[in-house]
Amino acid sequence: LSERLSGVFDRLTKQGALSEEDVKTALREVRVALLEADVSLPVARDFVNAVQEKATGQAVTKSITPGQQVVKIVHDALIDVLKGEGEPGALKIDSPPAPILMVGLQGGGKTTTTAKLAKRLKEKDGKRVLMASLDVNRPAAMEQLAILGTQIGVDTLPIVKGEDPVAIAKRTKTQASLGGYDVYMLDTAGRLSIDDELMAQVEAVRDVVTPRETLLVVDGLTGQDAVQTAENFNERIGISGVVLTRMDGDGRGGAALSMRAVTGRPIKYVGLGEKMDALETFEPERIAGRILGMGDIVALVEKAQETIEAEQAEKMMKRMAKGQFNMNDLKMQLEQMLKMGGMQGMMGMMPGMGKMAKQVEEAGFDDRILKQQIALINSMTKKERVNPALLQASRKKRIAKGAGMEVSDLNKLMKMQRQMSDMMKKMGKGKGGMMKAAMKQ
Ligand code: GDP
Ligand code: MG
Image (cartoon, rainbow, N blue to C red; front, side, top):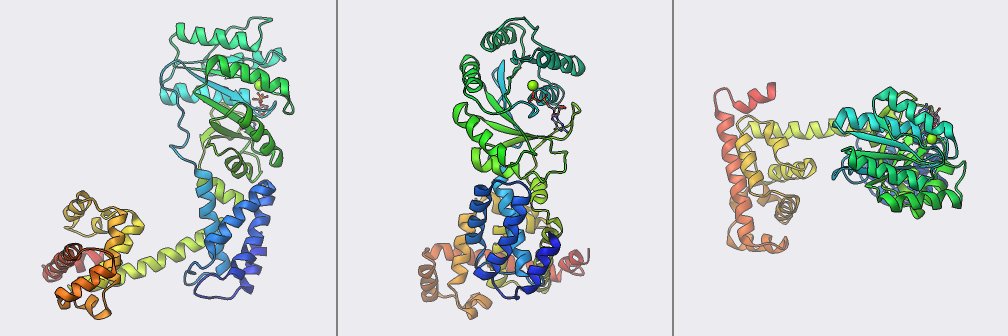
């Protein structure tokens, strides 16, 4: 695929910003990549359309092609969609005993995942777990869970012949309370395809225990079919998260994107084999790379962007080393901070500025203030930016008004620039120049 893409890239012209045509051409290939990775068709289409809007008009980083840039944008958007809110892999299992309901089609990996997760909760979180199989149709299924339980040292509910799933669920709940368990896990029966009886059964169980988590276990290799399964379970039962199994196979894992799009629920874990410890927290970055299959391109673009940022930072450091720090420098630094989401990053790198970074942080330097400060600088003329001493009363009024701010805000900004400038001068002159020393490191 990468080859086919580079063919497309070569044909694209190099420009300052992504044209609609550039984006369309590159996205056509991205769409194919998504479908090859088994992302469901409507999901792939919606995703590509959303990216199309986002990408058009974006600046192209020097030394990479527009097509490569689009792939990077797609990659980032993919991670965004895959992420979902909350801590990855976190489960709501406070207030013991917390019920976890495992649902999905037969053969998806429910029983295996139930045991894997029980083991993880026991070993990583120190929880006491009780497991029970509700799969009354297949006696072997109940045995399977019991055997796994013995293997991993987790208790299973004793099997009583002839009991129905709801009765087993009730017994598990009681046993979990009496036995002082933190969590109890219910491994439900699955069918080869969705049917009403299965759904009604799972609903009845759900109503008996009111699960804290209802996890849909889906075979990550099933692709298109998985979407229908997820839709049905989410509508009838209501799921709180997804576990994708068989991600150790050579599938590209497009089901992950489909699951997110269709259910809106987080993917919590991925199954990476048949062994009991082959369960990992879902990592959007890893899956995004795998779905696109264009990791080399993404890495290339990241490198190019880093290089340019480094060049800019170095230029500014050089000026600062000479004790120069005007409004242009301040603007650049504010923009940098906005990007890094905090002041410490930049200042923390400079000797002697840690304390100031802290003060600024405490003064409540959030994004909104940074943007206001940048707006103030934007409404200054070129001359004023280079030589802030020009800023007297009437000019101040004009600038503040232009940015929709008060003169007092501008005064604060100017004070900040003066302090920085003074500091730069001191550092520049210091023993051999602290800044110069810092730069040599
Ligand atoms: P259930 O019918 O949903 O309970 O499915 P099972 O838990 O019985 O799993 C069906 C088969 O898939 C078993 O042979 C499992 O060992 C296998 N399996 C489950 N999860 C994974 C996984 O993450 N990777 C691989 N390679 N096999 C898995
Ligand atoms: Mg099973």
